[in-house]
Image 1 (cartoon, rainbow, N blue to C red):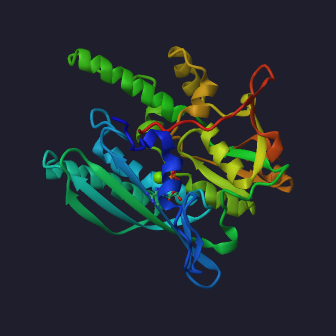
Image 2 (image 1 turned 135 degrees about the vertical axis):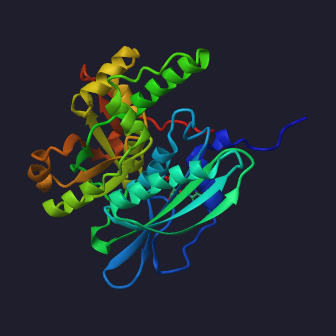
Image 3 (image 1 turned 30 degrees about the vertical axis):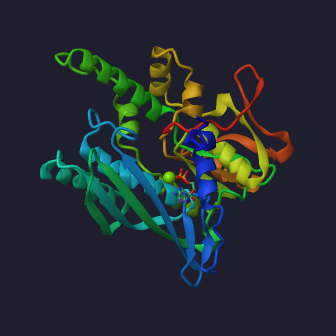
Length: 343
Ligand code: ADP
Ligand code: MG
């Protein structure tokens, strides 16, 4: 019999969201930005706006309890949402936390989870203001909603990049992905022989990047101090390549990024080489670094170029020129949208 249903894979993540929400027509003037950016933007009167973003972490898909301590998980769930608010050049002030949990978790485990949530609230100066608690048939589902605030004219959208702007990233890339590779390797070793202790020596930095990522709220403050307003911004949750494609397609521009400029920590590179992986590929396609990718006008070059928090990795071109990665040999490789990992 002919199957008349459509699989989710056929649409992909963004195709699915577009398909389900194509009926949406904004009916309220207070909705300054709806679906499609890192956070929604709501007019609250005066010269400020409220920003809202929500993300869900699911056991077995986004994390494995075999190696993710619950405290780290709580911290990460907050950090990834704060990162989305940072990506709008805004500061998070409140969160809500919704929890679906099966009876296999004792109260002590949930206390640990909330220790992590509390640590993140302290770190980013956030108030936990509500949430929801329900049971789940199996596993843990954790949804955090972050609420932020910014001056309307300071908000950086994904669609503001202009030809000749410079492309900038904060921090370094690829570490979280390599941390995951080490954790997965040790998980397999442990499954094969539980008597063998995990060998995580020398991998502290990349494991921390994976298990306890930090949102770059400090970057929002630094940009303000430098008096730099990004023309466009996005956070790097899925890997540099896919975020650059989003930024360029929403801004209707192209870009050139240069392999030799991509910031990669020495520990990330060494581990990648151990795994026979190209460090640049890990930075381009590995996810979960939660750094910020943004564009600035040429006039801000000096302020950013001399600052150790930032690396200029390329520049924006005309849309017709496409999105290109210039490799170590100087060959230009077109970056194409990737599939969707979680389905
Ligand atoms: P991010 O990677 O920043 O978390 P997503 O890829 O999850 O963003 O979502 C892209 C956009 O689609 C966001 O604006 C998000 O709010 C919106 N979105 C995601 N899922 C849904 C949904 N089920 N219904 C409506 N909007 C959604
Ligand atoms: Mg999301």
